[in-house]
Length: 588
Image (cartoon, rainbow, N blue to C red):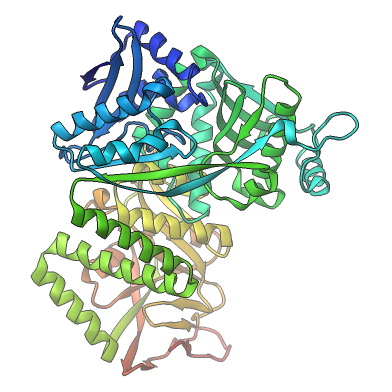
C-alpha cells in the first residue's frame, strides 16, 4: 500500500470516478463521502481550511483508500475536511485494508507533527471506529471516543401501513387539520428542485428563511456567513449534476411554507437543512413537510431510509423507528491534555444532568467570556477598572436619565438613505451583513424577539445598496419600562410615543446616522398625530448632542439612586393633561 498526500482537492474527473467508486463499495455509502462534497468544501472554505488528502494505492496503482482531512492554520490540529458540513465522515476503502490505511494515515500525521486529531461525526458502526483506537496507540496517540450524536432514522420497510399501503404517520388528525388550513385556497404539495437551473432561483429564498427562522429561536444561522452560502451553492451545482440533490419546498399555489435542502443517494432520502416560515409556526409547517416527505419516499421502492441527520429535536423522535450512533473521537499526543479533556467532558456531563447547575455554569462562562473580551479589547488595566466599577455599582449607584421631545426637523432630508419598517426578513438581511459584529448580532437577536412579541415597531436606516446603518424602535410611552431606571415611567400625555433601543453597527458609527434616523422616525410618528419622545443617559454626551441636532429638546430628567440594593427615583414626569400621575413604578 502506497499513501500519497495532496494539499488540495484537485479538479480531476478520473480521481472523482475512482473516489466515488470507493464510496459506492463502502459499508453504508453516504453522499457526505463523495468527491463532490469534498470539492465543494474546498471551494468554499479555502481561506480557513488546509486540505490534507490522503490517497492510498495498491500494487497495480489503483486507488484503494481516501481520507479527506484538513489541518488548522497553526498546523497543530487535524480533523475531517467535511466535519463541519457533513453529518457523517469516514475513511474510505475496503474493510480488510482499513486498519492498515488508518494506521498509515496516522503515521503520516505524526510525521507532520500534529499533536491533536479530531474525528467528529464518525459512525459507530463503521469499520474505522473498530480499528482507530489500536492504530492511534501504536502511533503515539491517546484516544478518547464519546457519543457525539444519536441520529434518528425512518426505516421505510418498518413503517406501519394502512390498507391502501400508505404509511401511518404520527398525529395524523393534527397533520390533516394544519394542511387543510395552509391549503385553504390551493392543495398543499411538495415541489422538488433537482437541476441547478431549478435550484438557483429558489436557493436565496431558502437561505433567507433559514437565517430568519434561527433569529426567532435566538440563534445565528450558519447561512448568515458568506462561506456557508457559497458552500451550499457549490454543493448544489456539483450534486445536481449527478441527480443527488433535492431542494424540496412545501407550497400551496405561490405560497411557500417550508423547505428542505436534502439529498437522495443510494436508497436514502436525507433531511439535511430544513426551515420554515416562522409566521406559520402555529401550523407546524416543518412537521408537515417531513410527514409529506416520508409519505412520498414510502411510495417509491428505491428508497429504504429517510435519515433525519444530526440533532436531537423532539419532532424527529415522533417519526423515527431506528437510530444510528455517531462518535466524536479525539487523539492527543500529550497525556496531560488527553486526561484533562476526559475530566472536562465528564464534569460537563455531570453539570448537564442538573438543570440548575447547568444554568449557573453557563452564566459563569458567559461572565468569564465578557471579561476576556474586555481584556482583549481594552487591555488588562482598563478591564480591571471596568470590573471594579461594576462591583462598586452593586453597593452604590446614581444615574440620571434625560427625556427629550421632538419639536421639528432640524436636519436636511438625505436622498442617500431611506427609512423602512422592519420585518423578520430585514433582520435576516442585517444578520448576514453584520455577521462578524458580535454586538450587532446580539442586538438583532433581541430585535427578533421584540418583533415577535408585537408590542413595538422597528425602523431601519438603509443606504442605496440595502445596507442597514441604524436601527430604532418605537412603543407607547406610558408604562414604558426603562432599564436605566429599573422602573416603569409615566408619559406626559396619552399621545406620546417613545423612541428607544437605538443601535448603529460598529462599521457605520461616526457618520451621524443616529441623529438622522431618530429625526426620520420622529417625523413618521408625528405624521400619525403622535408626539415623539426619546431619552438618554445624562452621562452620554455624544447621544445628547445627536438628539439636539435632530430637533429634540430637553424637557425633564429622573434620577435613580440605589444603596445596598435599595433604590428610589428622584423627579417627576410633568403632565400636559389633567390625568393624575402615577409617578414611576420601581423594580428593585
